[in-house]
Image 1 (cartoon, rainbow, N blue to C red):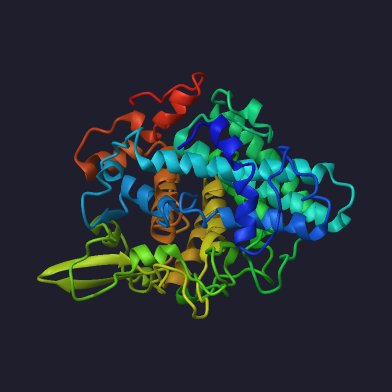
Image 2 (cartoon, one colour):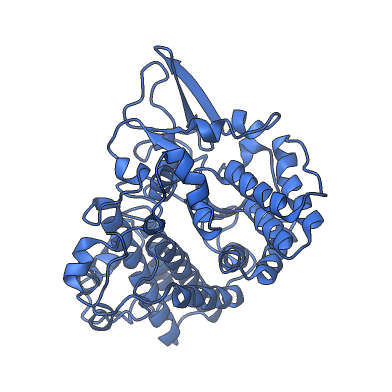
Length: 468
């Protein structure tokens, strides 16, 4: 992994060349400027450049949401919480919350996030300065670039805490930046999402596809950010704005929620490669064989599996199990089409990054924390009804209602982009929940991952998180 300075310099060319490899753009000779104004002079090339940011989410192997073609946010953060076990000791550093600063995980997540952010910054600068693009397209692409920058920074700051806030494509500036306070990073995320809301159209750029951001995607992510900031009223307002769009978004049957055609999806991440590909998640969660013990897949923990009540169809639809030599292995089954490499068949599943059920859960928590318990429980019950679970009483007290939110988020959002891990940390519940589960006294320093060791060597103004 390279320093900010070194990898920014290194990516001026490859960030664009990666587009050419995916038949989006032939960029010709290496650019001599940080921002190649030629790219943002024509509609086709500007569109290709922004599409390249989406490709960067899954194509390079060291990415958010994946590491080495692995859905890292779902897997490693699932191990760090109480959702997953791995078939071997390979990833014990995450399960035991002893993440190595010199390990691949932190380095690759950090590097890829800043790769994506570099491309976003380049796009924002190029689009802002362009005077030759079709006006409506320029506005849309700028909104997408700002949404994607916010998305990457949201995960960076929730994984690492304070991180450099790079907003300029000039690597001579970005390479020596110190860590910015998490509050400042969040403030920028909010600004980007507010801008994206204004810039993005309500309709998706491609008909029958939800793999590029629209206004609702920006609103949904903004609702989440406000929840994390404990801005309860704003979180409720933004979630309500999405939930009100009943003609576009709905809660379908459980077995339809994670399909490429899902009416619940607000924003999906399509796996890079040919158009006929499915998800990385299924490749790592669904066993290759049900007759041999797993060696390279993840299993659900018994604590999660047993947390589902009766009735609750999520346990039977979104999870499954098999037994080998008397040992039962349980695994996530939200995604069912197991593929290790892009295939030639029809695409049936995309990775769902934002979906409607989360908006119900955001609004439920926001309402309860504002004292509107009955309405909050009603939102929880909307999610539970889809699962066939018994309705919760609207007369719950505040403490019990908040525990109900925590439980519902656990059961609804398991193995999706690290929700459980982030929830336990942001609510201050991580020690109470994970200490008994892991059998150790929780170390508050474990709440964030270490800054990659190579970054500290390359940039002397960076500091390490406590405890590493």
